[in-house]
Length: 113
Length: 113
Image 1 (cartoon, each protein chain N blue to C red):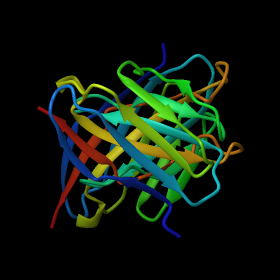
Image 2 (cartoon, chains in turn blue, purple):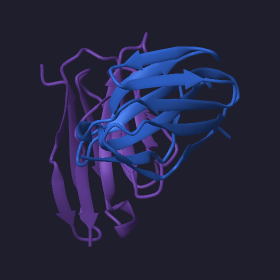
Image 3 (cartoon, helix red, strand yellow):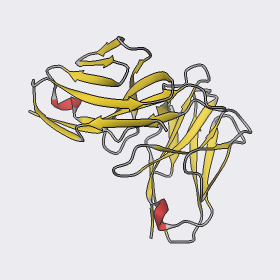
């Protein structure tokens, strides 16, 4: 069974204090790993797709990396507007009908001014 | 461009009542999904559709039914609501060729008393 574990559950940072969020996964054949951002009362918003170990993607202050067992979302010099819950998800290879996506429970990030 | 629109945004039901959640997308996406999100749990797939006139069960389909009579609409029905169905429901969609980048609606918060 595919599993996604995110840590920490919650993270509080001072503005400008860089850190990383972790996503550990087990999946029978990785098709893709995804990062989403979710603001309170909103639906998840897509950030990145990573397909193979060693791949990196960047967007503003966010950088996502991927190894064979985990992914990291690095946040450099965060600002209060980066406060949100960050979700990790993995997509297994085709299991007969649709591309199954398994989500983690998320890391709630709070950036203090 | 409205994206994915869910109605209603909030609803309170009594046990045993029925209701329908409507999801509409204006991006001409083939695939559509209904997820539920509960505290401490990742997004869990209820039902999905790979095209107009098709539906299939996800991870947690019991107590729900769906229909996709038009490509742009995906309806989620609760025939006899139970307190265990208290949750936030999200609709999502994507193109067949881009299975990992889900576009989510803003959610529908359902409380069953």
